[in-house]
Length: 107
Image 1 (tube, rainbow, N blue to C red):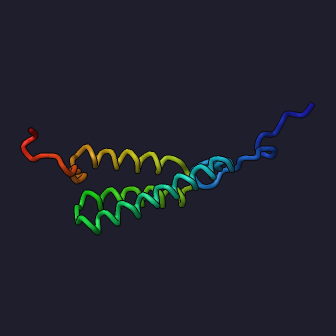
Image 2 (image 1 turned 180 degrees about the vertical axis):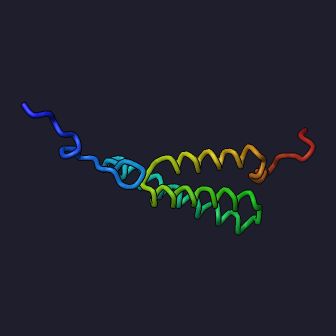
Image 3 (image 1 turned 90 degrees about the vertical axis):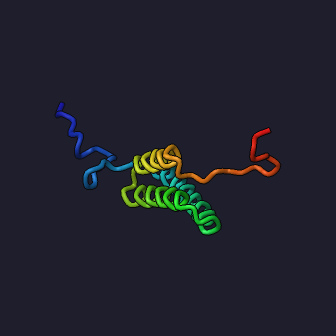
């Protein structure tokens, strides 16, 4: 029996530096990239209303992550973008939320 040639019978080929992504994973990347683009639009509308530059940075991170995930067709830009948004929030660049009926002095 002849040895099995993996390269000639492989269903997953390589393109560039990353291996090809299975079809199910591509669908997941498309779904999450679409959600990230909608979050980009929502946060950008909030930025236009409030003019808080932290919101602009958050929208930029979401949009860049979604675009990069679609161009590279890989999952890691979405994770990196989500981590970058959390880092921006932890730095305190997210605007404060004021609840109506809450007093200034806390009593």
